[in-house]
Length: 501
Image 1 (tube, one colour):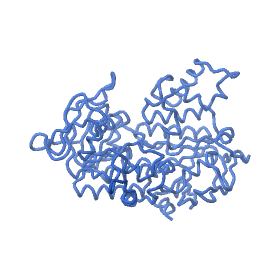
Image 2 (spheres, rainbow, N blue to C red; image 1 turned 180 degrees about the vertical axis):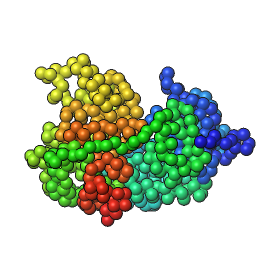
Image 3 (cartoon, rainbow, N blue to C red; image 1 turned 180 degrees about the horizontal axis):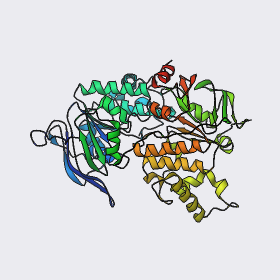
Image 4 (spheres, rainbow, N blue to C red; image 1 turned 90 degrees about the vertical axis):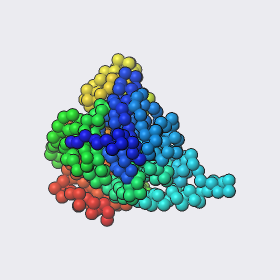
């Protein structure tokens, strides 16, 4: 570990200088006398668990709200943004972890929102479409700039958010979990753009829970814990285990737990399933098995599990549970058969953020917990308390889910479905945007479910996650099944060979 060196002039240089920044929300101090330097053309990793203060610092730099104490300078001048527009005008852009796009506008309209290109007093849609398509192509995303954002998946929306920032001509970009929804190829495209921009003097603050990315793209590493800087590394070649220990304040010896040995009994069978996004997919999942589904963005992973759980219609094939063919007219049919889905978009589809933990847990379980049609506050509190204990959620039954960290929100979404005691649980991107400590806790839950005899399906763009948890891995490429690999044969190279076929 090294201490961050000060510039020769005592703190002023042509990049970003943050000194003594603190911030409180109510009684909680989320930033405590924080210092940071980011020089031109430098990529600085900002690491820490959820709640460490990373996003708060990013929001202050991007002008979303002011700090309570401290000062900042940018390009050698005092920097005091009063609003995001001030930051953008000064060449500073923030790519949020949760996309903030308007679903009823086109991709190009979102990319240039607030700064629409005009020609002769009229909106120049042709030029907007051209420039948006150019940036999307550089990121490896082949979609029409006239397509409505609401029709895109989470990964594609994230790439549109990145393309939007790249068109700002910014000199400092704050990337908050930019690859959380991206696969390997998409991440590589993004890193190529970062490399090209840093050579032009563009600086980056890079926030990620994918610690293996840090050495690939970052120059220095700053580690946060409880709003304070606890470690600074002069280069990014730091063992992941060391970074994890610095982030959580303790040793995390094993990331992927033992998931046990599956039984022979088949629980879920999918035969020849097809819809417009995928064709002729077949697989089975046994009791106690963790079955992984891998593939690059656009392969049809999410579409497949949505079809299996009755969310999306199918054009052919069938789904069976315990030998009984399901008639899937909607999600209710799958739920009643014992098949539940934890969706990839936990904020938009998995939880009602304004409702309490208790209400979220109760919502899909009214038929099970409302005795004789009556539901009491005491019953809600009791069920929620059991869910909180089971999933080790850091929260109270009456606490709104929107006030929880990402990891605890995910635990609530899982808990509400476990209340139904399902036969099959499907988890789509179970740890997207979750810090390493909470990620390890989710992995333990998955392992416990498998060891208890439940059939578990894990879909993830994080290949290490799929390989570390799964007994077998199904690989999709462009909507087609390329193979099913047992754990012993499912290496990074083997999976990517099939995923790019």
